[in-house]
Length: 356
Image 1: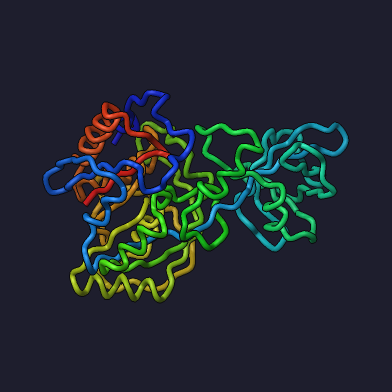
Image 2: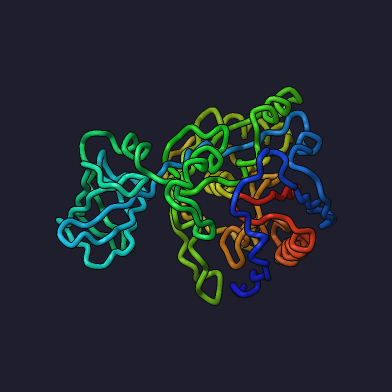
């Protein structure tokens, strides 16, 4: 299929720049995959859409304040640092902007959120073939403690904030059930849940299971090739526990539904699927790229946000809209056109969609 097939027109003003005040007050566009019928709901209506016995799989990865700023030793040039993955204690692969004229041995003094220099320095010690730099951080304080003090929430490129304006995003660009540090982008489908909604769903008999997939900056990587099959998919770290594997296996054996919260949970489940055999607990990396046509092995319904044109996430949703076929793209783009006409909010802080 052609990348251009997944393009659509989105007015700039529909890209949500801030979250709404109440998480579960967002709008919810539903699609019945058997009829391609769409309907308008509120996210809080999810309680009426889920059944007793459903298993809802959520990504518990926590977004870290991974963007820091500083100045190079010597010429004082400004440098923006985005931590992407820990290689060893105190050593992180990072994206630098600007990245030119950085070499092994370059020292960068870190600044706080007000732009003032701190006593903390990092050193460039390696560079890989993707353009990322390996930086060595000071032994004290620990990296996560340092980021809590001077780091910014790494919002998507279509949301612009000054460093101090990201303080509130530490809470709102985070799911209420996040627990495992490691993501540089939120698993945004989960942003709509509140603790009260989760309690009501549990009381109804819905079971929750957790996976971990640390979302990297590759989630915003555009598909630039003409044929989607030629796109080099980024890889991400994931984990599925023995408890989650057991819960999913039992539900499938009993004919109960598996509901994926977001494309990240979906990618974990499809990565460990074994053609009908019970899944096993795993810790690893995945670069699975799901696009039409695709036969899904585990998931019966998908809760997701609205995604960027020509993105891998839109391609995944299109595949799920008609498993095993290619008409899902047309179904999803029709639903997106309806959402645009009805002034839905798009992308990370936007509204949601439920395909069942």
